[in-house]
Amino acid sequence: MTDSAAPKPSKLASFFKYLGLSVLFCAILWGMLVGLGHILQPKGNSKDDGLIESRAYGFLAEPDDSLDAVFLGDSLASTGFSPMRIWGDAGVASFVCSVNGEQVSYAYTMLRDVFKTQKPQVVFLETEMLYNPFSVGKVFKQFVKDQFTVAEYHHRWKELTLEDFTGQVKYDKVSNLKGSNPKALCEPADTSCYMLPSDEVELPGKLNLMFLRALADLCEENGAQFALVATPHTRDWNYARHNGCAQIAQDLGIDFIDMNTEPIASEVGIDWSHDARDAGIHLNYHGMNKVSDWMASYLSETLGLPDHRGDQAYARWGKCLEEYEEYMAKVAKDPEKYDIPGVHMY
Image 1 (cartoon, rainbow, N blue to C red):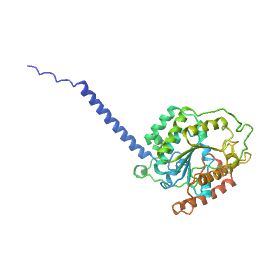
Image 2 (image 1 turned 180 degrees about the vertical axis):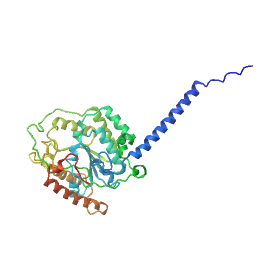
Image 3 (image 1 turned 45 degrees about the vertical axis):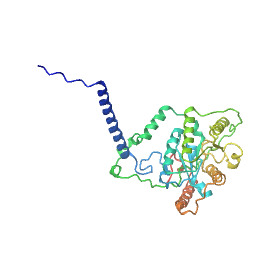
Image 4 (image 1 turned 90 degrees about the horizontal axis):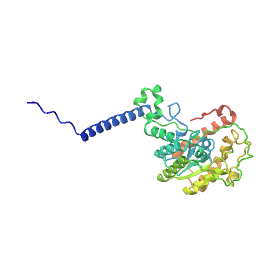
């Protein structure tokens, strides 16, 4: 008498078996990626610590819920706004979260990080970045980096020390520039074609508009006012882009400040023979001061943001202002030395 053959597992049982193995594999992989990400993550907030875009991410060292205003954008924001100048004028605590050549998709990542520790009352987006194109592939790549630190900092494996395995993340290097990047060189701008009247409307691309709306929603979710601001800029800014941003602001129900149009342009008072760093692309620190003085008045008088000068909780800002003014004296004395790309202080 022969034994009967063992019954074969059903297709459904096989499906659940492989599904379980797949889930287990994904869970193990996810755990490994998270663990490696913690090891590779810089343990400090300076460039020497390995933090990418350390100037823009200097807000990590600011006390929680201490910033009143945040400026997002590309290099036009970091050369256009001086939070320490604004502090000296009005006592408003602000920070410039900008990266050279930044796309609005990365601004969304940065603002989401800002809201993890800060509750600014107002967030400004410098509008030039809305016209910086990017692809869906760029968005996907940034999404992966946002989810897994290992994707952003995989290059650090050669720099790892014992502290990376055992140490805690400590963001304690306070920036005296608060994200700004002042320059002192001067190259006058040609204004012959600057802001010629036009009824044309140039809107940003669809991806840019999608992320702009996402930024507006993110601000609303976190109780912050969202606004667009165009700093003085002669090369790429024109009335078609002004009209485009004015239309967007109206559609979103937000404010749009254009420092290239009247009456604000006269109030800021840019002298393009003296205040331009590189023929009208960026402002030098003379232009930055004028923009920041105007913004300080707007923040305090129009928006009613508080003056923290004299508040012990903001005592470090007074010390930062002293160090900032010492640094700016050096910039004015030796413009070329302090105009090297990326040079900034802490």
